[in-house]
Length: 102
Image 1 (cartoon, rainbow, N blue to C red):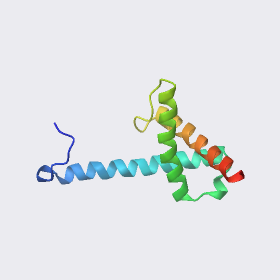
Image 2 (image 1 turned 120 degrees about the vertical axis):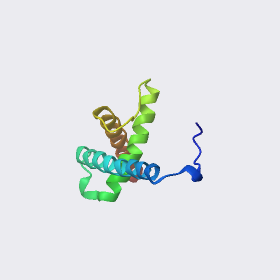
Image 3 (image 1 turned 90 degrees about the horizontal axis):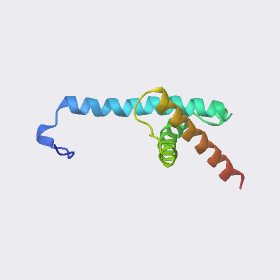
């Protein structure tokens, strides 16, 4: 089956699964970003929106780092994915700090 969207067969159920995925990524990103900001002691500098962005970008960065190490990246809403995303979010905060100092 093709991965293209066929609007003639697109149902409300397909749309709700898509929206749920986005909502889960926002919640997951916010949680990861918040924990990373607590670990890196930058929570006072960030708001909810920045926590979400750092968590989502951190998940991508953490997945990339883990793929370099020959491991899997973020694959769902589980503890391993949380730790991978947390690693990436902490790396991202450290990079942003280093860039701000120069």
